[in-house]
Amino acid sequence: QVELVESGGGLVQAGGSLRLSCAASGHIFSNYATGWFRQAPGKEREFVAAISRSGGSTEYADSVRGRFTISRDNAKNTVYLQMNNLKPEDTAIYYCASRSSSWYRRNEYEYDYWGQGTQVTVSS
Image (cartoon, rainbow, N blue to C red; front, side, top):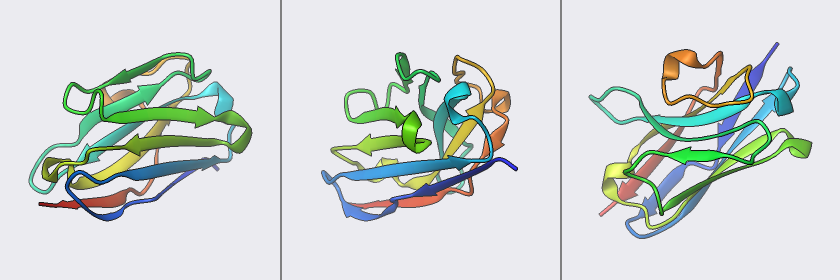
């Protein structure tokens, strides 16, 4: 059974930083590309960042590029999202997702497995 568990969310002031983790189990993690998505209250879920299964390629939404960094440690079956210079508009539930492919996609419907999410709240 594939399981993804996010952690690291919390409350932070604008300009602060958080590091989210997505721990995977139940599948050969290094075979899966992984993405981070977020959903703010009253809004649709949106793409944030993604990383190829090897970690050699990444992609970011324009709204977070230069502030967020996605990385992975396949030995630890974990993907990270380092979030710096956080803004109130980054407030959302953050989800990680994986797909059985070398390559990521920006479309959430192309992901096979999802975590339960972790809340990030940025105060102004």
